[in-house]
Amino acid sequence: MEFIGNDFILNNKTAKKLYHEFAEPQPIIDYHCHLDPKEIAENKPFATITDLWLAGDHYKWRAMRANGVPEEKITGNASPDEKFKAWAETVESCVGNPLYHWTHLELKKYFGINEVLNGSNWEKVWNQCNEMLKQPQFTPRGLIEQSNVEVICTTDAPCDTLEYHEAISKVADFSTKVLPTFRPDEALDPSAEVLVNFVTKLQKCTSQKVENFNSFLSALDERVEYFHQRGGRLSDHGLMKIEYSVSSEVEQEAMFQKKMSGIALSTEEEVKFTTAVILSLASSYKKRNWTMQVHFGAIRSNNTAMYRKIGANTGYDSIYDQPNIAENLNQLLNAMEENDALPKTILYNLNPGVNDIVASAIGNFQKSGSVKSSIQFGSGWWFSDTKRGMIRQLTTLADQGLLMNFVGMLTDSRSFISYTRHEYFRRILCNLVGQWVEDGEIPDDQELLKKLIENISYNNAKSFFKF
Image 1: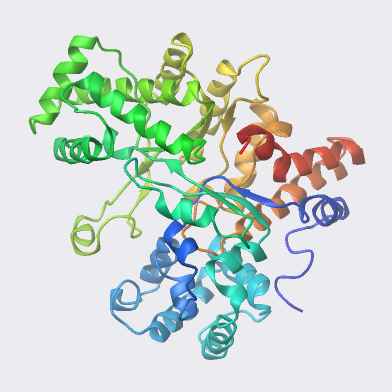
Image 2: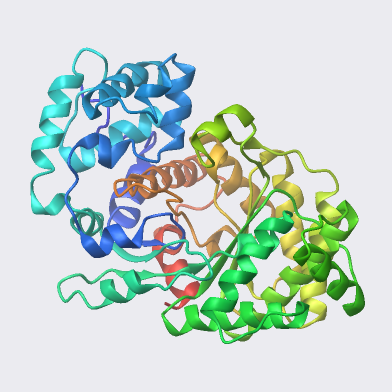
């Protein structure tokens, strides 16, 4: 019997009906990912399955290291077939890890391969995948179209020219919208050197002469408008922790000048500076009806030796345990509300231990008479985009908010075949709701269930973001 069957993860009669009739046919709105717009614009074929599947995938890299694979066959100069073989040999050890499910979902959906990948059949799978990659439907745009994707929102630096987004928009036979997302992490980095370098770039890509804090904020707002004119409707912030502390304009100017002089701020000053920048950016987003995304709770690049050797985003990150999250988050959202600067917001916390804290805080700031659930409890992210993590997020949201209004899943991936994460999520969602029905916890009302599943799979994202 094949592993990934038609009813994979659908363990009750209701779940099967919900998935196949209501969830499965829905298009995908991938409102947060890390795909490279240059690759989409150029649409070059992939040389091997290794290039498509393993390049930049720090989830797989972590598993391979844990399985004793030499770094040469992970991020090093080993040949593509050696790297693929090393991954295939690792897959068997991934039983219980979401990578095991993702791997076989991708092989089934895109390559029609029903075999379980392992160290014995790797060469057969390698040859079959590589042969199929020669076909036009396996280019970046071909894979996106195969996946029924309507909208992709990439993640882009504030001074990005967005030239590849413009090029994509002019491709006549490609209907998927590829839109930029404003990611100003450099503006919030605690390093004075990073800020100095960022300001240099800002002055080159804006009309601003950045001499003080106000002109710095003005330059950031100018770049937000640049993104807006090119279809951008979301921002994203990657924070280790949520902090809040008020400061005066005099303090803000002094802190800006101090950092621009190459002097690191004190811990207290850094919190004040970050708070001031976020509040200003939130106002920029609110006046343009953008959605602000905040991903928080990751402690990054913990292995210093490997960071020096191969850099950031290579699989040496983990969950951060922040104290005082409830007070800081409520104060930050409250300050935005007080200033009439609270945009539509999605909060993604990496630590599932604070799910209820975050979800309950969100309920304090919902806009009455506005878009439904204007402040969203984001989907299970990174270490929590597992089956268990998704169920925790969905049940917490149902406990503390309105599951019916949830904007659903995203890929958060650099891979063109990660769209199976939407399928994975939809199957888990339908299985959960189906079990509730069969347990008598919610009614077996087909109209209600159809609305719930289609809303979360597609409709809510479409109405929330208004691309």
